[in-house]
Length: 326
Ligand SMILES: Nc1nc2c(c(=O)[nH]1)N[C@H]1C(S)=C(S)[C@@H](COP(=O)(O)O)O[C@H]1N2
Ligand SMILES: [Mo]
Image (tube, rainbow, N blue to C red; front, side):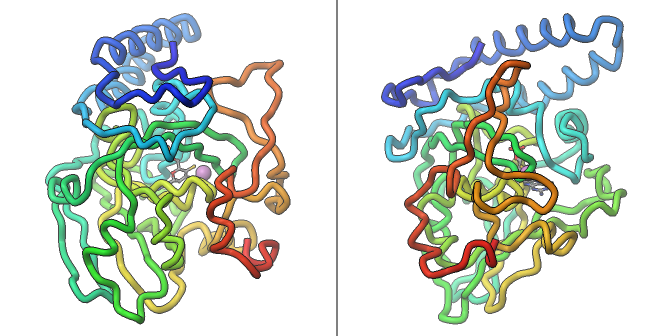
């Protein structure tokens, strides 16, 4: 029972249209499905579903006005899929780990430091951040480098709104995002799978592009912990790992930042990481993708689109060899 069904992309709902009842219904059907699929799993089963919905359930409603400029034709991913199939390595490397383990993340109080090459550095608490610009609902595709994708109604505003407030200096050529790394809250940090904290970055013009969404909610609620609460980036034309979750610092810098996945495997994960069906990952093709929520044995894979279909970003990369700057 998907919460959002918009085959034509024209009927634009407001976030407030999602009622607690629908969330409740979705929870019930999810538990039913799990129960059918995992008879006998007993207490483990209870833990899993309980935790996943503890995050989601604690999420208060968040009002936002749908922005008709940012809508895709594709049907949105069912909410239950979006919050139980996640990459958030700070909580473990299995897709189900974030939903199971992110309950320990404390998202209030939370501050985000904006610093570096700016005239007005500032430290904002999450409430000030929420009020910095009008919240919009935007429905974006998000394509993971692993070959799956989702369509999610996010809530936030363009990162450019925040950037304008801090007034970057002429030396600000890149933006670096640092995310929380706290051993007490994040069991995944025990694993050396990545260098912690998880750091990501953008070139300044990419960061200023209106598509770059500073994100605080999804499906009409504040972000569930496993989805990157209380604040994350969403960069729909780039592979998902560029969209850093649970950000604590945004730093404006002169030189290209070192980024988590690039440090780990530079040959596989470039700094740009724009979605590009013509540039394969060294170990797999990037030509097609599996849409989470619609996968079944007979479901055909979807063709991956250049820039994930967001052609308006093409001018940012004019003249660049995208095979070299992958
Ligand atoms: N801090 C942090 N941010 C992260 C990750 C992570 O492991 N840690 N994983 C990334 C990857 S690989 C993807 S595909 C997206 C997944 O976002 P989602 O769970 O909302 O779909 O988050 C990205 N942001
Ligand atoms: Mo990803």
